[in-house]
Image (cartoon, rainbow, N blue to C red; front, side, top):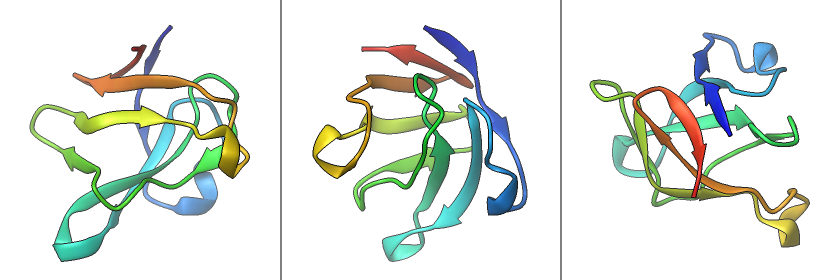
Length: 85
């Protein structure tokens, strides 16, 4: 998988695989609400994820948790691209 990140400014426009909006998380860390690059379902991030605007990367890795209704995809956002783990 190699899908480009598409940052949008409105959470209601997070509709397609790779779409995401920056939200402020705990301790003013930038996080993402995104459409899963595999299944396209919208999901939020866990409290320990941080989005780095300079590198367009997100860490740690992303898991679209099946226990929470996700598809199980596991991967990374690196240099503005969603890639498999």
